[in-house]
Image 1 (cartoon, helix red, strand yellow):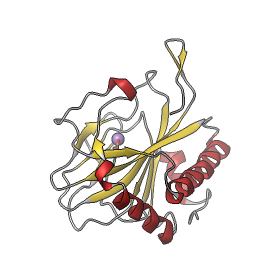
Image 2 (cartoon, rainbow, N blue to C red):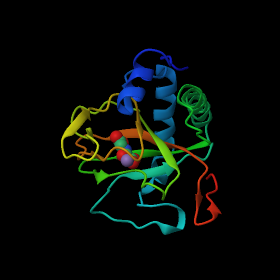
Image 3 (cartoon, helix red, strand yellow):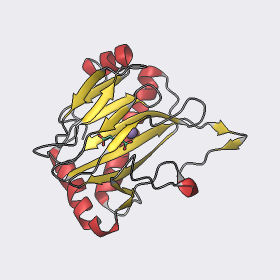
Image 4 (cartoon, protein in one colour):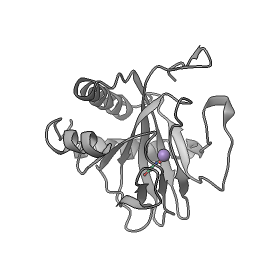
Length: 206
Ligand code: OGA
Ligand code: MN
């Protein structure tokens, strides 16, 4: 299911710079099944919020994509979760990251949708350690993921979404943004989490 190994670029990239971009990371059938799953649940995508659970603030100025949190309602989702589970184990074994679980949602960007500069986790305020983004289709134009160098306004890398490309990066380390989509853009954004206690309350897996 996974078309890459922990040695080579995966290890070196994460070790030396905190992110990696892996084209054709997963097999094509799985990508096609996930894409079909998106079409199935198309009417149920909802406006993405900033923040989590009941603290959602819908803010059109920052983000304009639509999301659908995985609910295990298809074999494709279950298979994807199993794949991410093996990547979680891989990260723990290789980097001693102590990652404890994984959460993810489909994201759909239609013409003009964007996600302005943000970080996925704030130091000490979140238990998101590692971000994953898997692209499910290949738009002809638009929707690039731009990752900035740590503590800088200089672009580290700009990634044009391509079906099957998997991006992994340290959640606290990189400010990033999604440039306005031109064509429809489908992806899965997810977060490997550490079980962190925030204000004495253990954050439950969702
Ligand atoms: C996110 C995000 C990047 C992408 O959902 O937090 O930054 O390329 N996504 O979709
Ligand atoms: Mn993000």
